[in-house]
Image (cartoon, rainbow, N blue to C red; front, side, top):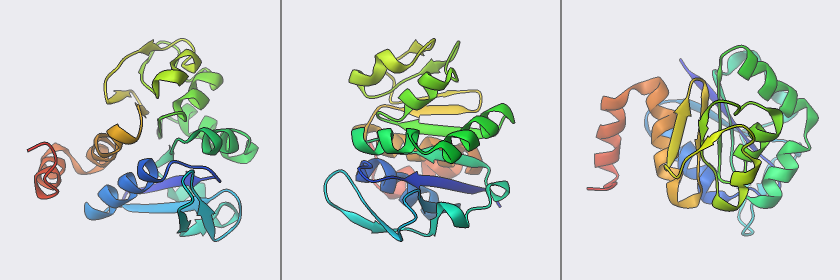
Length: 183
């Protein structure tokens, strides 16, 4: 069974995180919402507080097949400032495991040099941070083990793409139809 960790810091963009969690769970994927603040609930950019499944100290990274970073300006800064999580992002990338980010968060990958020679996308005002990438305006880019997306308006696309990595295109198309997505 594939397992995904999605990491929440104060100021995360609620739709970008929760749309992915919802889509993955609808397709039977195990996805843990993990607080990097060590609090059991984390407040998003728009004041929405969400209860987490785990705190960072409770995570066994050996259990995960993918790590995800939601966006939000403040949330992205707080994720990037979390040294132990950044070390795990590096380890997953180097091991060829999937890593993903949406909105402002792909800038973290750019700062780390992960995007050099890859196609990537992000929120438009963060594109200059995608160091070494071929920047696109696509809703989602999957290049090797790295997946990026542009923002709240592409959160469903991002969730479907993430789920598709583990469940296949047929299941994703079935779900998209079931949620009346772009019919």
